Image 1 (cartoon, helix red, strand yellow):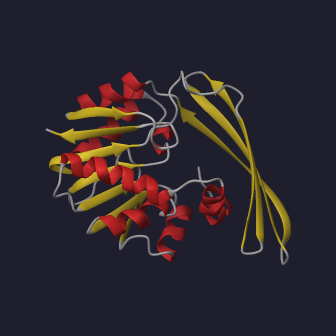
Image 2: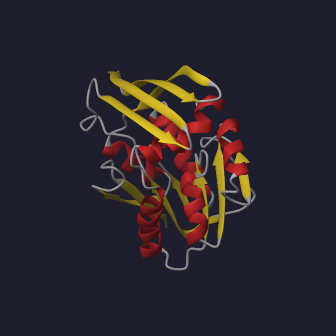
Length: 237
């Protein structure tokens, strides 16, 4: 799971790769407001360093974030992505309030290891919604859209620091295992190398939809958005 080394360069790398946090948050907000026009409060689950959360804070009156990585939350706190940030697990978190909207972005839902864990997370989301509240989940790839052996390579330079990122993904049962290598270099510290390994579940579309329904949520799938992975949007009955 995301450690201190990656937390410091996480957004630098993904912005350099072309990720547009503002566009993605606007897309999600559009679908939230289409279902609940008065939505004003939002919880971003697996908020990470606050890349999406900071933009949600410009769109909604009251936003909070939750993540299980203290290293990522430390970055989010420094940037003041939201007034309230919680350390917690999406499968078990219990906050003393409810929200108009709950989001889970950038394929983070895929870190759940099984359908039972997906059910647990969706139940937590639904339990933290006001009546008529909305859940928006940016999924990881489906089994049929995952590309076996996919290799990605990028080099990004920002503020005299250069980061090279190379990843390779293979299918492993019902999940994808992604090995990522980073080389980070600057004039003061020279170059350093570290690696990350991520096991991310390849839940099928029908599996997501069934989990939404078991949590008491309606569900729609919007294809083509969020870098092609699509977006699940559900609403509490």
